[in-house]
Length: 305
Image (cartoon, rainbow, N blue to C red; front, side):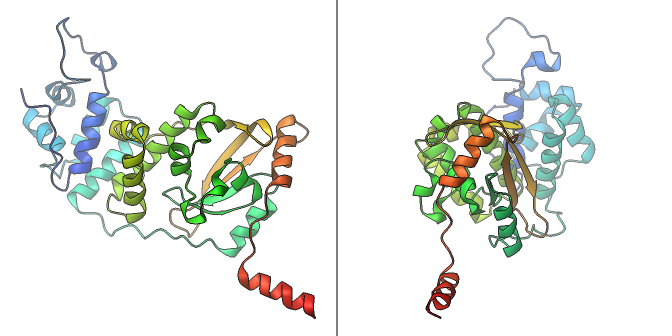
């Protein structure tokens, strides 16, 4: 039997890591295999079991997982996806990893923009009292309205360049208190980062953040090694906020046009409810964003005149 140790060498390294993670987290029962009562040293499926289920040779699958085979056909990818019972998002991620491994992507993805256009800042202001913010693909907080920053209690204490949702979840002491379902929140966070890093593993914005969290958070390390790429998101989130108490808000996230990697996040509550009252209080008591120096100078000129 081929060794279970993966070397993850070559251009197919990310593809191999993903396959191994999915294989070791898929039990024989999940795919309809009957196994004996003896001790299994391999977590999840063995390589030969997966190869048989997918209808490919064991040697070929081993080469895929070790990153030595970088041009699997679409039919092979589909067969492996069926054998592992991948959902649509995981199946698509598998295809994207294979495309990159084969080096036939037509062009590299455009670099992410960190510039938030002025009209989006106006949108954030008009959304008040709903907490709203714009984040990058690596979850850096790029722009926000007062409630959008204050909702993450304690995040405003960090310098603006360090304000990142993933960093907050894993490294800020308030995060596990703010989110009663912290375990659920961090799993979805890591899955999103894994998906982004898998298709652009050399991007500095992603590698710097992941490297920091791998060094500083054992919880992040455990989740990162699972290689989940699908985060199960709840429509509603409950916050145990130290300033306004417990509030449950409905969240929505959407990609922004013509700004690669940027997303707008908004939280809402039904008017007239205690949650809306708490949200309104958060907006009213949160510090206003500091004005741009040019704007302050203009205000001072008007005052003198």
